[in-house]
Image (cartoon, rainbow, N blue to C red; front, side):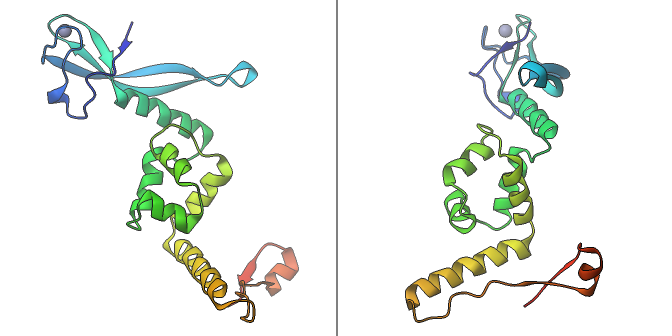
Amino acid sequence: MIEKNKFSISRDSRKILCPVCESKRIVTRKLSESFPYGSGKEEVTLSAIVPVHSCQDCQFEFTDELADQAKHNAICRHLEVMPPRQIALIREQYNRSRAEFARVTRIGEASINRWENALLIQNSAMDQYLYLLSFPENFERIQQRNYHSFRNFLAGSEQQPYQYPILIPTEKHKRDSVAFRLAA
Ligand SMILES: [Zn+2]
């Protein structure tokens, strides 16, 4: 039986203390842990590789938040959505704080915070939006859209509203209804 321990949280294994006897002689192994996810007919068994710490003095075994992260990532893989770290990396590649990223994307800051801290998993539509935001040209595009909306707001009603790009079907689209060309 592995007990969950929330007290000796550390990424640095040298700083891990046994929560029972406070020994520093901790050996960490990576073990595959299976756990149920979902309920009823939807229930599945997922598995994750989790670090398990063993105290060499009192033999107590425990896990920390790295095990929780590994299991959360396994759930994200199962749901086919990005794990928390990947969402944070998308935001960080633009050097934006969560508040700034929220302003540009119009995603709630609380949601971004929960996703990045593994407190909540984004739905698949939001995951697709985040995926698109990982491409700089798309991020730039919505920033431009925000900028134009703001300018129109300041200019008042006599100004031309922002012209959205119009999707014009190409010859190929007319043939098979698949391709679109983005008109400037
Ligand atoms: Zn111990």
